Length: 219
Image (cartoon, rainbow, N blue to C red; front, side, top):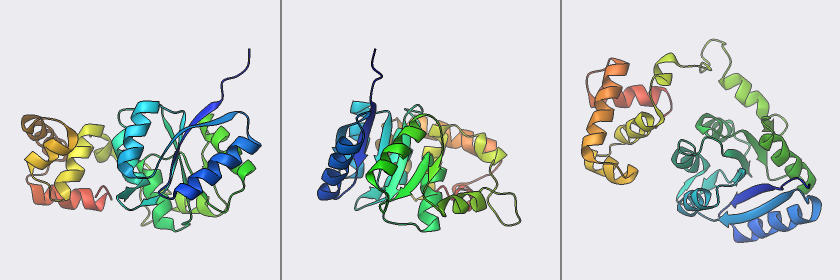
């Protein structure tokens, strides 16, 4: 019995680039199938929820947001879904942002078709994949050297994914009503989450929560 191909959902705001990636993968990898594509954050979120792919091949920068925003909206509800960032940028901030958000790897658009197919296979199997030199950014960011971000934040780990979503929007200045509309929950539920976050972080007001979230790069 033949092995099922890896189902890939392709996200990039340039249609020509998407066509090129699709054609290249069709040529070099018979075990990789592009099942859908999107050109914006909204389309990416809707498509990921609809197709439920094995791997989302994700652009980092898009006009209405970026890869990290797609990850924030999809990953909490579909933790089994794997994300591989594919970007023209090799800036440390871009790499760290999507890895913190939950991407399994990050490769640049200088990658060949065969290398991209191999990267898709590897992240699908559970490996972390980075283009040369980008791995160093991740190691630095999650190392225990002085001034580096710790790999584990005990306080942050106390929060549920939904509590983090509420906190992130709260820190951006959203009102409770706006948070409720954004997350499709009731205002009462928002209030419950905020109370829980305040209790867990031992903070007393919205201003302190915003600073706490900013310090942990949640905003």
